[in-house]
Amino acid sequence: MNTPKSSPRPKNQKQVKAKGVESILVINPNAAGIDIGSGEHWVAVSPDRDKKPVRRFGSYTAELIALAAWLKKCGVTTVAMESTGVYWTSLFRILESRGFEVKLVNAAHVKNVPGRKTDVKDCQWLQQLHSCGLLRGSFQPDEKIRVLRSYWRHRDNLVRYASSHIQHMQKALEQMNLKLVKVVSDITGVTGMSIIRAILEGERDPVKLAAMKDPRIKSSAEEIAMALEGDYRREHLFALKQAVELYDIYHQQIRSCDCEIENYVQEFEPKVNPESNPLPPPKKRKNRVRGNRPEFDLQSHLYRISGVDFTQIDGLSVMTVQTIISEVGLDPDAFPTEKHFASWLGLCPANKITGGKVKSSRTRKVVNRAADAFRMAAQAVIRSNSALGAFFRRMRAKLGGPKAITATAHKIARLFYRLWKTGVAYKDPGADYYDQKHKDRVVKNMVNRVKQLGYDVVLTQTA
Image (cartoon, rainbow, N blue to C red; front, top):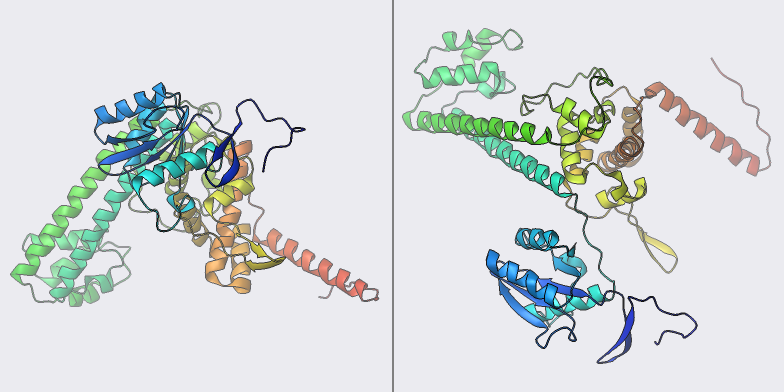
């Protein structure tokens, strides 16, 4: 359909004719599309920009620089590419450093017509969609946050690698019928590692091994000695030794990564002076400190660069806040409202309405580390004597556990955004306040319902 003459187009928009289509409104005439691959990239520009509008480039750095130079020559200012594995990262940085507006799009949102899947058609399809303004780029924080995100994701991988060797230790102990996991809750704690290292040094006496227990261990020395009577076989001791050595190596690498993160975080510009505005006193929590927490004062650094102590929100630990900040950055203006923030996280209902009826309101399936962090925070308030804890328990009684976690994560995310946007401190009103507020709301709804039926209501407080 042609654009009416009464509504003039903006200067950067024009109409072009395509085969089988009467006219297409072009919003981004200087757009290009790139199909990303591991060994080659296919790039498409508008046919009027070059005699050969589709070209193939390799994945070496020199070829990526040549790709950017060709796009400059063609007058391209904005580029769309699919987020294919990690192959897009190098090209993304090169194009961004040369002044291009780069949109990283979800491959599921730009599927081509079935039966026409080629690299050439994919890049042309991306270019066509992008020129018409039909593509929405994925959120990307600024460069400094992306560096911090890479450090933190690498650290998370090291923690997971170390945890796999804990399972190897447990397997070797079980094969020797040493039931240490039955009497010690965490074999990587002080008691567990002391006993395991003594076994590797040649100690076999269960009584001497049991005497190494920490006073905080609930199991008695007799129970621990009984659990350590086993079959000390040579091959299993060798497997246990290697598992402990690998566990120590990974924790050494984690400490090195922590030093690198601490040095890098110190380069961020402070939003608050901790000396004039000291960090609020920590809230008393009964949950124990996680063993993989960094040794340096990460909470003070987060408070300095963000200006807010997010750990005052129940459920949010220092590790959780660091994960969220490394994913969303320090600029709240990237999300216009808290609803946009919750939608990006995939924690709000995704209504599917057809024919005026809501067919589904399930949340979207997203892969988002920040959303996972908020869900972990929601699980941490299950037994909390706070407003969020009371909210979770009411949602669990009403909707069940999984939906209660999502609902509570949604509420925590909105609280996080408000603190992130305004910089004010969070004050928990308490579980009693929330329960009373909920009770008043239920009574008000019941009174309104009775009045709608034509009756008058007089409320009296019972003992």
